[in-house]
Length: 170
Image 1: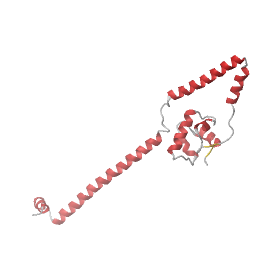
Image 2: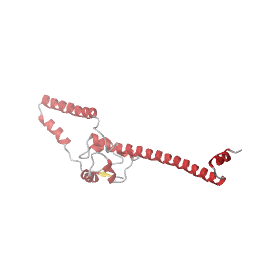
Image 3: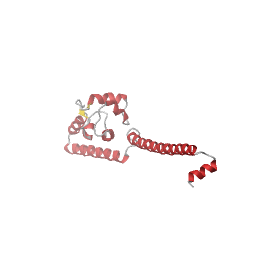
Image 4: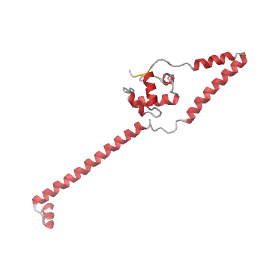
């Protein structure tokens, strides 16, 4: 005797009712599988969203790197002061300071710019330049819309307006 027939006799079900219950159980199992599959897709989507959010929610940047940059700048300034004192010419030091304060008036192609080129733009230091380069890499090496820059930590609407004047997205 067939196991379904035995089950049907114990539960007092007809063959049609057993078939219907089997189909419904099949749909229930299929629904559970699909729900699990969708939750895996949602988890994957959340991971991608979290990875892209790291640019806007970056914690304190590498303080050691910043300290090293500051220390290098201090060493250069001290060396220039010593050289100026030895030559007895404070004019050299003043000349050095004057070229540092030049105002950038051109434009930079953001999609091709290096960190050094980005740092020439007023308001962009080494940390912001690295954030922008990491952001560009996350976008596949190309940014096509200025509004995308709002995703980068440290860039608000005011800074975006300044960057629009300095950057080209060619």
